[in-house]
Image 1 (cartoon, helix red, strand yellow):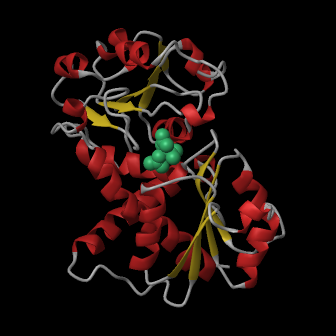
Image 2: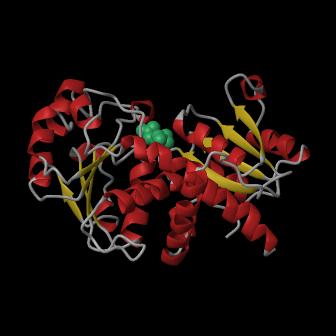
Length: 315
Ligand code: NCD
């Protein structure tokens, strides 16, 4: 594996290996000195054409904890606003010796374009491309589920687990990567959304579809993963208005109070409190939202280590 562009780049065993490596990285993150020398003298660049808080910061922290030098490039404030092309931006970084490009882009497939081009020899990691995929988010979600859901024998995988993903499935790269990864690891994954926010081909990618959230929640899932409404990716009205959405599809206080107390609540962030999730649910003991953020650093350390320290050595 040279790049990480999609969950499809990982076999089940490769995904489990990465999760196990992330557990080792978690140990490093609890030490007083949170640093490994693995990537000393190597340079990685965060190449972000879309806004980000969690993903950008955690990739930066992950690279620094492995002793790499990190460059943060964001399209806003760069020569992209002067009309510079993706090719010239990538070639400019290549000319300065960047060995890994961590790319977030609003166009689905932009990361594949870079990886399949001859613009750069760098390793490419998809940090979210349009409505396509966000593989490291799915890996950190799988790690969080593995560590937070009790009562199920995990052999590194998630066999027997029931996960419900709720909300804007159509525009969500988080949903797409999670559907691929969680099912690869043996979980049963259902989705619940208004019919306007599910892709027509959804039946191929999930185990069940519920067009009624209350009916879905009555089925008792181990994990309920809420998604943000991707309004920046909508070119027309996919729902009447935000209060209708939160009435029908939000994890509000009433729905939260009816949930089994062992049901784990997740959200990739950023959250719209009061729209897709209430503060009571988001801040509850059942919520794993901050664990997801913490685990993001360890998972991204594992991915960088694997692609830059291990795979390069095998070249
Ligand atoms: C997600 C993203 O950017 O795809 N956020 C994240 O990376 N944690 C989800 C979102 O923006 O809704």
